[in-house]
Length: 588
Image 1 (cartoon, helix red, strand yellow):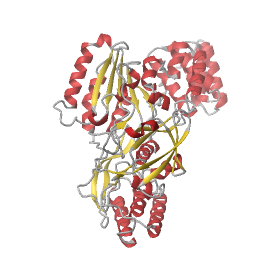
Image 2: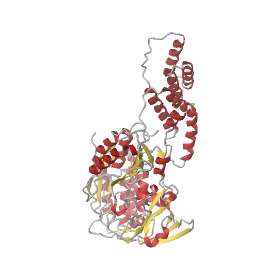
Image 3: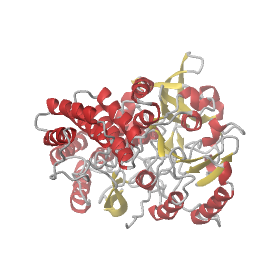
Image 4: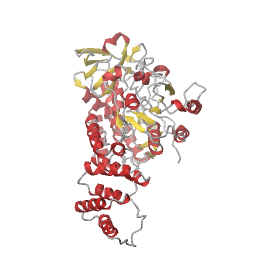
């Protein structure tokens, strides 16, 4: 398999910093010419422009952008109108850069926010405003935060709703973005409505600051780094506390890859923050990998679990993935059920997502956390497609379509086996729900639970999981259309391995959860036939046929069983009658 180089694009500040004028420096006709240039380039150079949208919707957005430009009073508004077109195709590797006629990101508010299960909170802020760290953000200039985020999402190039939300949260720090979207009246200041950690309401006015430092892909910065120069405060790693381990080696001196042996938990925690060689260091990723695996092999008796944390990894060079993946695969003491875990999040993107999907295909990893920012289908390898002829903003267009989508998997985003997202209390108090779940939780699928504990116990376990994770609307593991098939697959895997009694419990679970589905009874009938419980097999095939009179397999098997019960074995049936093959599924 040829592995593409999947790189995020750094949005660099230019040496010359033109200022966005409140008035138009370009004419309406010039901006419309820029719009037509972008549309033409997208239509001629993008590998599959209408893969996630359709031409009717695309043309409608183009028409609306033309109208916005015609009535706009500033260059900034015209530029954002054109960005909406690029954003509409839902390709994070295609879009406009931020430097041209003016620099979009040169005025920044001195704080950053993140979204947790209970809202949007200030996670980094200037030291002189430290009393507001950990405050929940309710509104900006009277506009509810959800409306603000929805407005920003329309102008960012994200592959799915989680990637767009990640961009939008970062966009709150950039004054011109908010001003151009008419969230704030002026890029000079903003008014925040907050709820303090004490529960009291508060208001905060912040002035924007000029800053020309580089911005990462997704309008991002390393964790705990403020958007401008100066001293900022944010939650930090606390020595000896595993719940704050994810904060370690972040900030200005971020390490792209590092590991720590949690001796008491017999666990290796490997944080992978960038699929790239660390700049200005002799030890590249290959050398680091060799050193880490040497340590792992030498301490194998003291390692029970291996955690790969990809929550802050927004991609890089996909060529680095395969050698590392091979090292994981060949270590049976790690690559086993209950031995390998992967943590993902909204920032997990591009090469990091590809790495995650390869782990899902080739290893027995259990995935914990939140969906990634791009999913299994993505366009990659951004290439320059020219500058807008009048405003000068560079256009980048993806050149390759990369897909790692398997049948029945979700192409839009990766669905972890178990949700584990930070609440604000977790984040600010040194609690890591993903690591805690891995180290102390019972991470068995419903089907595995049935195989181990029996069908009746698994029904109760299913109800427990359903209630525990009901707030995660994106978590589709227990959706009937997915769960029925994944339980059936697990049963066939066990049956093909000769583990018939455990397979019987798994197939029985499916009949309890989905009693009106004919195929679950057919599968249970087949299992009973394999273990020579012919009366039960006949009963279950009969039930399947009642639910689906067109089930020819059930008819044939019932005829076969009746003849065997009377001592006659039909020569037309072969003992090796093909079973339904278990389909690989990402979720279970």
